[in-house]
Image (tube, rainbow, N blue to C red; front, side):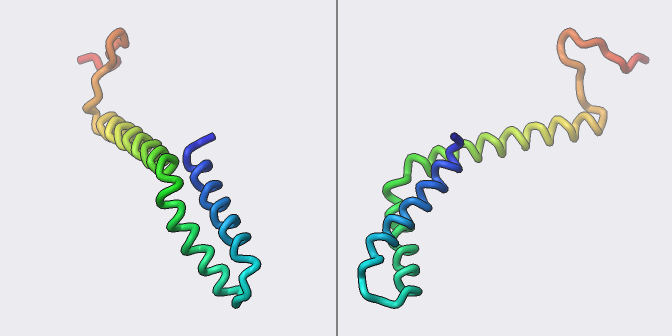
Length: 93
């Protein structure tokens, strides 16, 4: 399972858990939802740190792969690419 899915499910789980804990408190339902949102966000900052860091790492790796591929494609379109070792050079003079 990807880190983003784990983190998202963890955030939703924390929200539902806090909301369940506040369910029996006598207050306005909108206020109950807002408090559950704020408390679950604060709890996730501490409890889900590992999953958040893992997700950030995966996102950084994906970004670097996209950046590298973009540079490779730009240089290929500009005619600056060199054939890899073992590949024949189709550009003969």
